[in-house]
Image 1 (tube, helix red, strand yellow):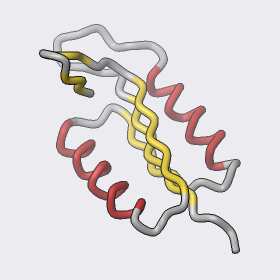
Image 2: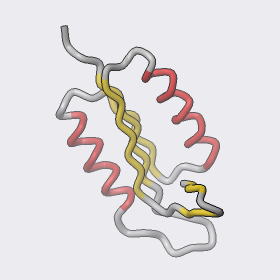
Image 3: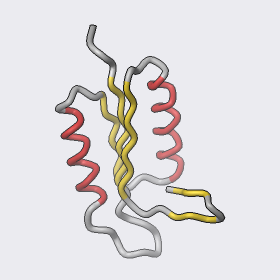
Length: 87
């Protein structure tokens, strides 16, 4: 029986009030293509806001319940405040 492989790939390059990053959108597209070739069911979002990312993460959480393998990839800015990491 084949394994169920599930992935969420996010690439955020455009941020309000900051210069656009060069690579995150391209990195997300490249990673999505590579893991799709490995039989992952991939959801890819690019330059999404908080609501879209939260929706995609909720969907991933639900999809992982029936999956054998889950993968999450994020390219873009992150930050840390008081030891907590944020996308």
